[in-house]
Length: 217
Length: 157
Image (cartoon, rainbow over all chains, first blue to last red; front, top):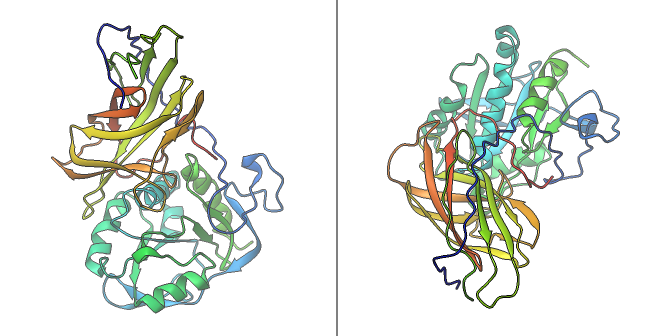
């Protein structure tokens, strides 16, 4: 234990450090994503600023329960629309609210017409705590002021695990608290060719890529 | 260990707090140990109905010793501990002459039992006690619920 003594010199400096536009290349997360051109590395999917997926992943087929208590099908209820898919839990103070904040920020960069095409699907990995009502309240923090469709889903443990498997993300553990940080973006052609991992320019990447996937590839 | 750090005064504005603690020659009279700098501190407030906030910082260790964050006190929450990306309590260490950061998905200070609702733009204060350096006072700004991630120096890619 350090003994902090008085009478020693202290240098005081105050600076404002606001660097909102820096580029940060991601390298963590499940799988082996191929970085895009933004990360200054070659990629067969270089037109995207997120992580290119090769091969592209088809929109997964799973049906879970939405915040109204109704069945909701990933395969059909968002078919043909650009769709973000993210697995997380509402008590998460870290990646989950940050990711939803990035999606919100990306949407604000788009026109209202572009926003209205987009679906954001949040699937809880903590089925014990995250009731439909809890998910609805939590998602409302991030849907305010934008015109996209936010969908919150839950289900049985087996159903939620199967949904993660269908989406090719690592199945969450520790009661859902250890979960994939990946955000998949499916396009109008119902394939995901790009995904995102938490970084300081994630919102910028998403805003760039949404219009690209809003029309069939 | 004697006389490594006298104390720190904080002056910060805007998004980030910056503190430079000059670690002078120790009382044993050996060498100037360098500086310990905490920058880019910010708080992501809880998204209701969640009640837990996350604090992120970047720490540049200009000393010749590994610095380990031992304890955290804040003026806005009764409890604050470092969590890893897997939401378990973890150690946060900074190697000599290196910068390390707590960033979303790569560790954060979890603040629980908040004394009041955090508002975007609000400034809060933390005291981070490093071993062996000592206590560093940090000012952190609360971002909005829908604000994106600010860049943090030393964030690993």
